[in-house]
Length: 138
Image 1: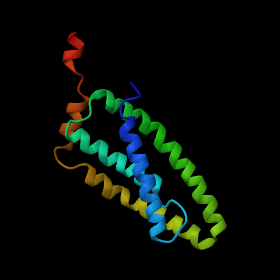
Image 2: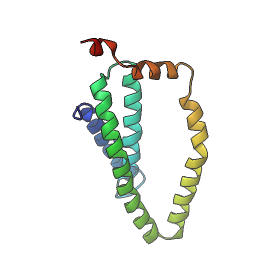
Image 3: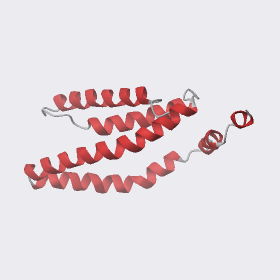
Image 4: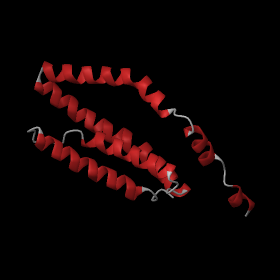
């Protein structure tokens, strides 16, 4: 069912928006700074944590996969459009900051890939991907 996991998604979204607003106020900007990114990061951390602790059942995992597939591209595209429009109006320094950030993130992808491939993580993934034989027997 798609509805499973929505509470976790909602929590991550609301926490990200609150933290983004607080970050904006902290640096003196009257806007949400990084709320979408914080939301996605928090959602990924929560999914990873609850999966490792075996607190997410299969239905919740499937629901989170669905909403993750829907939520992340749509919200990132909306945020990117707003950020590009603000950067163009903000001048060349804002555009330069955005381009430099994107380049740095692309350069960090191999490092993040290595961090994600710690020993033992594949065993948990394989266990979670195995079909539940008890369900098939019934």
